[in-house]
Image 1 (cartoon, rainbow, N blue to C red):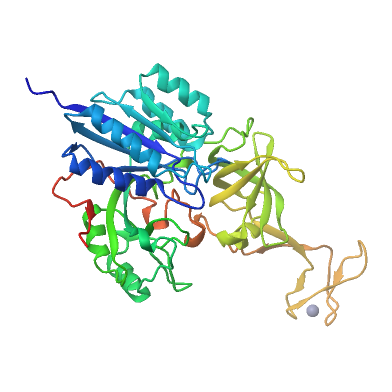
Image 2 (cartoon, protein in one colour; image 1 turned 45 degrees about the horizontal axis):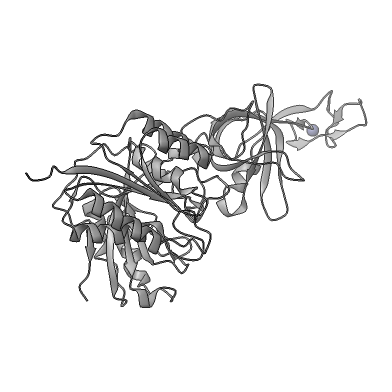
Length: 443
Ligand SMILES: [Zn+2]
């Protein structure tokens, strides 16, 4: 009797370190292996970014999930484990986690776990207990922190998504300077934006798709549709012979970590989310160009910091007491000098207070500012000697408008929802098996 096909959902995370490797590259290796085993893929690979404001994240706190159907689950699992061991940088401080779940559908408690990992700090022991309770087969190396993302990636449910097409370098090229034709990237963006995004910084004339570290990624193209990304990648010119590419369905660019409201009574460190409040102290600029201000909500004062690289510091500096705003970001734990701070990732102005200032009155006849006669002595026109008793209220025009202020593209995080995506939601699409979403070049 032929064996039934079994479904395997696998998730893995935290295989990279700041110095080497990359969880998506491991995924590329695994998919190429799975292709040889003739498994049936049930969806695109998922690249899920979790809470970027936790202290021990790897570069982007990104985990990968794959769903397949196979006749040889035991063999597949054994070999995937080998690949995870081989391509994890445990010596460099990675704490890989790998999980397998062999059921057709994913239970709701997996999505609940995943949702929490988007904006909170989740303890690895919590993940270990979850795995045990739900019959997950696991492999964890180092301290096993990677289990959190591995489970989260399997449980993730898309409400919106984007794609990223990552191209990978040949082994001999890893660590060497990436040479890419700048004009071709610029042109590609001009032709394909906003279906592709965050590829080129026009203001700084800079390519944004190439990382700078020693990892195997040559470039990453972001966009709304997988076929558009494949077309766009053909416009990018380089002399380097690449190993191949793989496209991921991802929550990048969805603002996923900032969907919930932060509990201001708790203000738990490493929590991400939003707060609506009123400016309670005049913003000040610190050395280094960072701006801090206080926001009041429910009688609590929350210190907020806007960092210089975001380039929205002048916006923050123009806020005045009484302005109602919504900020999104992560809570930084207290330091020697500061209480807990919200590191601002976006700033939306809901209501602007009138900027009223007292000024000496003007003489209407002579169109001149009057001079003070001394304390409580009133004011007088130097020309016609007309007198007026007190200062007048003057409305200073505000330099801000009721809108969303986002950081400069160069300060965007993976999850930052770019301005052109503010009202866009990509609905669930069917997995298109005719698309070449993963390919290894034969050269
Ligand atoms: Zn006068």
